[in-house]
Amino acid sequence: MRDVIIVGAGPAGSYAAYLLSKKGFDVLQLEEHREIGKPVECTGLVSKRVFSMVRSRSMINKVHGANVYFPNNKYIHVSKNEETIVMYRDQFDKDVAAMAIENGTDLRINARAIDASVNDDFASVKFRENGKIQEEKTKIIIGADGVNSTVRRLLSNERPSRIISTYQVDSSYKMDDQDDVNVYLGSSSSRGFFGWAVPSGDITRIGVGADHDTAIKYFKNINKNFNDKILGINGSPIPIRYLKKTYGKRYMLVGDAAGIVKPLSGGGIYTGMISGKNAAIAAESIIDREDFSEKSMSLYQKLWRSEIGRELYIDSKIQDVFSRLTVNDRALNRLYDILSSGPIIKQINRLGDIDYPSKIAISILLRRPQIFRYIVGSL
Ligand SMILES: Cc1cc2nc3c(=O)[nH]c(=O)nc-3n(C[C@H](O)[C@H](O)[C@H](O)COP(=O)(O)OP(=O)(O)OC[C@H]3O[C@@H](n4cnc5c(N)ncnc54)[C@H](O)[C@@H]3O)c2cc1C
Image 1 (cartoon, rainbow, N blue to C red):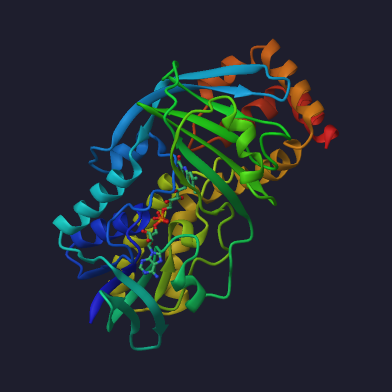
Image 2: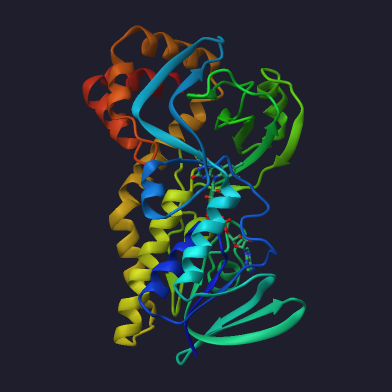
């Protein structure tokens, strides 16, 4: 019997596999695709924290700021000394998976999990590997199989409660300004979320997300700023609310499978890897005490929530308000006037953090409550 079977070789699953294998556990990891990291469905923008967790050669560019466009076509510029990294996402996934394999993970590709079950004595996963059906027993299953998780569908009753639709292209357009990403707000750019353009070396990643709506409807309004050759199209749903229960008897859900994603940006690489890390820590302790009951597995949720749960909860409340504001162009333009006139930009530049955006929201709320009164009053 395996110690752990991990379904999915995205960043959350491979990071958990790496940490568990490094500790000497017997880990089987299943990936349904023939190539790790493909297809790419990501902009590849992460904080330096992510690159301090893994060794990766996937960096393309470093950006330091953002131009945030409002419906009046004016923009505010925010920036930081610390860089944000733009990467080749497929190479990144390959690098994390390589760390897992080098430490002993038995990673199978073209191996799709099709069934999973748990009982008092063991858990088991049935999978189709290169067309052949196989089954393996394990002490614990980690579902790291993304937004449409099979493990979640089979073992949990819960589904993600909030899903963003996305549409993104790789454009041959090369932005002159390689140091800033563009963010587009307003009713022609998105409903409930935002549009973006990210300078990625010789190409630009141009995309849009929409809440309660279809992203493609807004895409042409963002792309008209660039309108160059389209080299690739991608987009998949992003779950922006974590599940109430991310564990059960003999299983845990990590990353997108559990909705452990930043609600304001839809970024899930950092949060997915944090959940993968905590799943690995929990699995070690659970296997050690040989108690695989639901109560014992709840350790995983306690761990990841104590690290990032508060941040994700506050961000989800801010996103509720932001989502409603995005369809109110008058309020957004007024917000532009407030933000561009004062020292708030300095405050944003000082405290802004793509992994922990609540810091800046709380600081503005404390120092300038009139902004929040204005926003709430506009809704
Ligand atoms: C358009 C777009 C842009 C984004 N941009 C960013 C960004 O800039 N920064 C950021 O941090 N996040 C971004 N994200 C979010 C980020 O891509 C995800 O949050 C992240 O990939 C989650 O990692 P994961 O390991 O949980 O899941 P995934 O990366 O989805 O990995 C799951 C893996 O499981 C495999 N799998 C699925 N089902 C099975 C099965 N039954 N059997 C075996 N294998 C299976 C899949 O093939 C996949 O390899 C973006 C998402 C989208 C859609």
